Length: 137
Image (cartoon, rainbow, N blue to C red):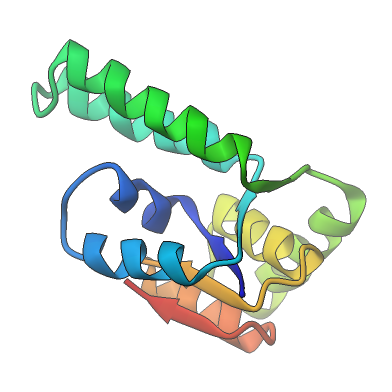
């Protein structure tokens, strides 16, 4: 199964929090992990914030970042293309949604994801309204 993870969900693969077990489950179920090109900087941003807040040490940060970089080598990464932008704009016009969340939805649609995984409730509703099978973690 081709599983798309938005950043809010995929970060749970590296940082233990509510929803981490579900993310690991969907990663195990995936024949292919799909991500938007914006996922990597968004997740690194979250890890940097945790480091600045003292919730992860410098060495933990480096380890988590290395795991993330290794994982994205095997993932299908969707570039920001005119088709992604068109899908993102359509989802923005039809839903109450932030721009970056719409880019994740547009990427999932272009990659023909079989499942969209998020931890953002507004994004979940928007993904479903755009025809994606979506779950919340």
